[in-house]
Image 1 (cartoon, rainbow, N blue to C red):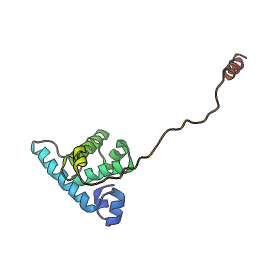
Image 2: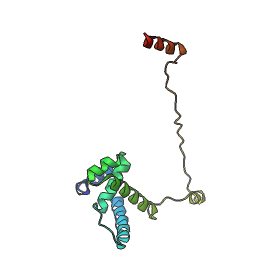
Image 3: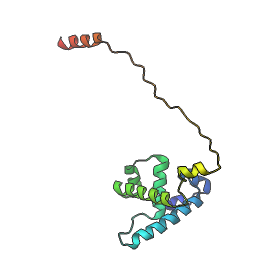
Image 4: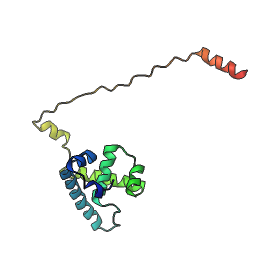
Length: 145
């Protein structure tokens, strides 16, 4: 879904679709614009997608678990371009100070108490009838006849 269509949604529908508030989305777009200008200052080809569509592509990838092939078809780019775009946007936002998570040492030093919920997701074997040697011998006899 292109940004031209999405920007017309009200704030509740926008958040429902993208997973972020419009103010956060605009902040992310600003960061991407700055980084893209720095990257393109050295030279290079103009991107086919603008920053809004790049970010929308990434949010769609993260929120809907769509494959790069499906996303690339939606935005009219190649699958490898979709992959590179998603990686660049993720790396750019992670490296920015506004979206960086604190390290382990900072968490240990802080006075904030965190509650941790552990979920046990063990695998249970599927119950199937046991195969015996007798079944194999009967199969061989049927195949011989």
